[in-house]
Image (cartoon, rainbow, N blue to C red; front, side, top):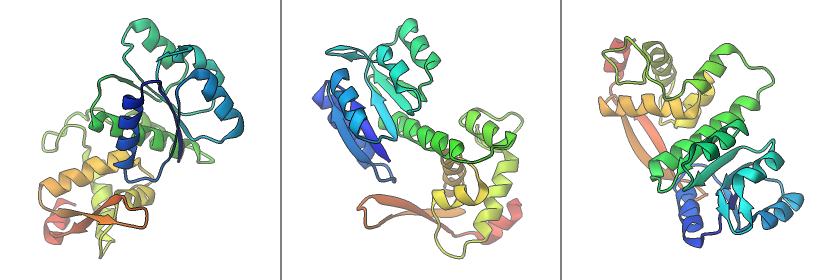
Length: 226
């Protein structure tokens, strides 16, 4: 994924870059400090994601949004007034982070973009896929025995998929097999780790970035949950 960071504060831009490095995906990061430089860059380069500040040396990011139609955009800014937030959302930004922000919240935003791009890459989309994307992170009701946000129906699908793996597997593998968003699958795997059905280890591939690999350690316990 090719990323363009539009941010005039070098320290903030450096934090963005470091946070991207901590993700499992590979990113090609470019950085400009003004709207004018961003326009010139986009004329000659293909970009998959734009991380946009609002207060820049030559204008405001929200005024640039109409020219960025078609790009997934995350706004990361100190602007928390309702006018700016409304303008950003009405122009289709995928997520909006208010400075200062945590790595966890940044990571959620990147996962949301990944799910957004994956959803729109399909030739046809059914209602289940749309609901999975739009409701990701919302609390499911009447699931007292599960952590908030987890559904018993989805958990059953995840458990059935895990059963088919005799060796380690990644979040992305289960997400692809079930056609469910990666961020959603990660919540279920984290739950299964917390109740000692799965173990989690980090493996390093050619990219040099750690990838979480899960292993089933309590098959009998898993089968009882089905």
